[in-house]
Length: 87
Image (cartoon, rainbow, N blue to C red; front, side):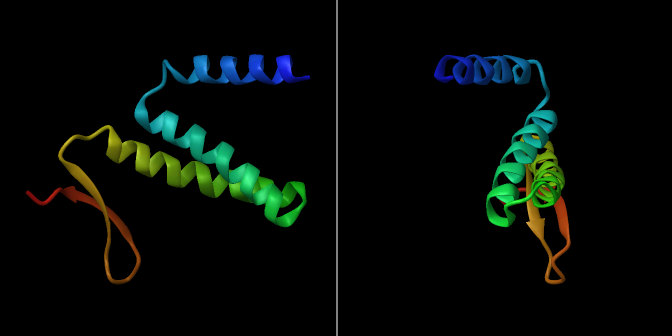
């Protein structure tokens, strides 16, 4: 069992190496969200919602990571936007 888990982890990491930073962020966010959502709610629906929210959030953060000199902000109404980083 431990050997299989390590093999799956290695294959997952190998699959992510060819992705853009946006795709990597979405994948990591979706996986993390699914684990957290499933653990908190204890059912598949919670894992699915967690994966969706984590995937979108990870994609946004990954998109910013792929744009040097750009930062991720929130305005006073809670909306997210990307703008030039302060110097």
